[in-house]
Length: 189
Ligand SMILES: Cc1cc2nc3c(=O)[nH]c(=O)nc-3n(C[C@H](O)[C@H](O)[C@H](O)COP(=O)(O)O)c2cc1C
View 1 (cartoon, rainbow, N blue to C red):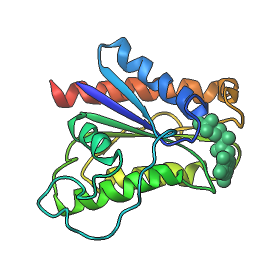
View 2 (view 1 turned 60 degrees about the vertical axis):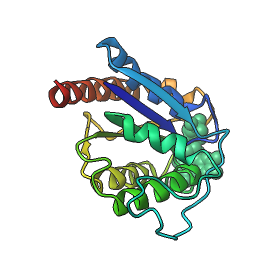
View 3 (view 1 turned 180 degrees about the vertical axis):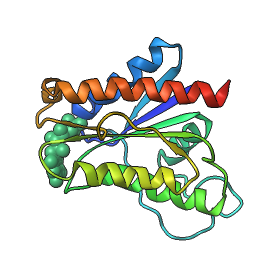
């Protein structure tokens, strides 16, 4: 089993990364492999609305890192999408990735069917729940199973590392990792 975590932050080692790693530690504890991809140093074009991906299982624009990331999403049993709140929603890097992933999956149904989806959000003050919802819309629109925890999957902090002070968020992320592992094992064994 393999879980792919994507960090949509412009900061590679910021609060979103801390929250993601807290979830992944629980997966690793029970032997589930994982990988984090940071979008911080990657440029991803937005969807060009050409709809030439019908029957192709990938985007036909292949001059950026989209193909590499999308192939990893297709191979993973579970996908964790992490984002800081930017202007009360997901980052534009994650938005560009999800625009294209959504259109390819819409034109080629079944790509994400029965995979497990988890949202993780870092926020300074406002817009976290909206950001969680945006990520979950991607999962729910592509026949994925969304995992929850005991609170919504968000942590509060402004500067890198601040989220370590949000003890409730860290506990929530640990529990989220345990729940994700539980569902992965039920589905794949
Ligand atoms: C461009 C930009 C927009 C932001 N907009 C919001 C916002 O609308 N609401 C909020 O609570 N925090 C906002 N923030 C703060 C980040 O969400 C917060 O600092 C978060 O912890 C960053 O996570 P990171 O360290 O993983 O990048 C914004 C930060 C940036 C850089």
